[in-house]
Length: 127
Image (cartoon, rainbow, N blue to C red; front, side, top):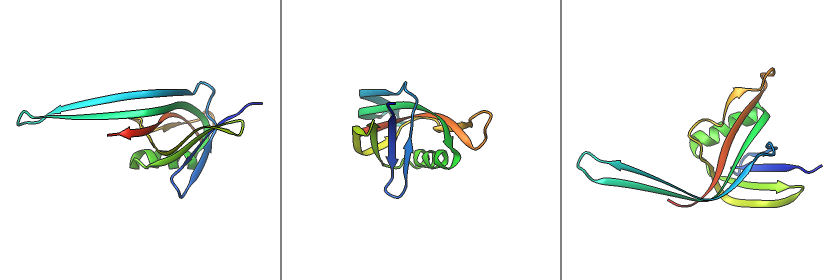
């Protein structure tokens, strides 16, 4: 049987995840944000992502979900690898969890020692 796995590491801890099969591999996403200051000047931010992986997870142990939430909150740089049947599909030396909300916020039902969640991993090219 074929398996897809995602490996995330911050250099100290490594987590191996098995996402659902509806994972999405996206390319070239550009986000732009502008803010007008009180003096009238305009501040513009441009985020360019080369690649993104969006995926959902079920029944992730609470300890691993807590680690991923901590990485998201601290904006930790991660080493990411997507592996299909033992063959690497994607390897990024530097990537980030780029969601607006916490990746894991609800428990798997009926269990309370596992969590369900979804998040996006992005490789940042330029800021």
